[in-house]
Image (cartoon, rainbow, N blue to C red):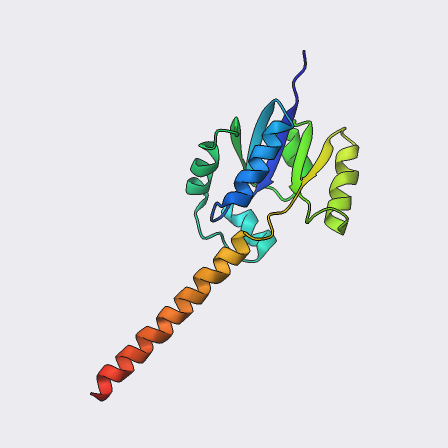
Length: 156
C-alpha cells in the first residue's frame, strides 16, 4: 500500500504555535512528513534578513517535533529542485500564499510532477515577523534607556 509523503517548508525562526499548527495539520494529511528548514542564506535571500535563530538550532527544534518524521535543509530557491531530492506527494503552505503570483506559480510548477499544494490557515495572531518586531522594539527601548541613564549619570 503506497504512503503519502508530505513536505512542509519554512524558515521556522522564533518557533511559535503557528509553526506547530502547520506541522500538526500537515502530519494529519500525510503518512510521512518531511519538514524543510530553510538555510540561513536562503532565508536572507527570500526575507531580506538572516534568521534570529541559527540553522543548526532551528533544525534541531523542528526535528524534535513529534509530527515531523524527517527534517531536510533547503539550500536552493526552487522547490522543484528540492522535490528532486525529497520526492514528496503533497506540499503544505500557509494560505497567505493562496491566490498570489508566487502561490499560482507553485501550483503550476508542481502540477507538472503530480504534487498537490495544500494550504493551511495562516496564524494571524502569532508570526515570527511580529515576534522579531517586538524583540527589535525591546532592544531599541533598552538602548534608549541605557543611553538616558548614562547621560543622567554624567550630569550628576
